[in-house]
Image (cartoon, rainbow, N blue to C red; front, side, top):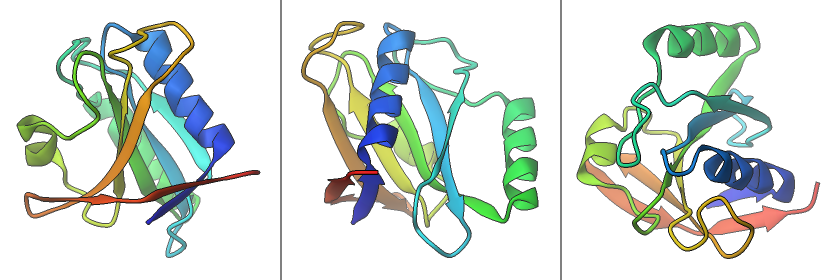
Length: 140
């Protein structure tokens, strides 16, 4: 189960809307061993695509060094889908390389950049197996 604050959910949704029609992507880091997402880190989609996301390798290396310095891990790896449901694609599954991370997808297919309904779901992806998990949104 993913437990996450409303502020972090709002930040992911805002990033997804801001980057629409391209997919948005990022990480929410947390203290090592805690499984608690705390630090929102929006990334640039190097692919600049409405159907695919890719972290810039230089930015990703910098992020992992920064997380190491802070004793953090990527608790949540998120991205958006702009025209489909919030469910991992075959490509998403193939690139999932953090078995301890929660993979969160935000779909902006209904409203695009506008306020309104969105879909947010979380998954564990381990060795190609996708398991949806409940999301509990908590106040600050």
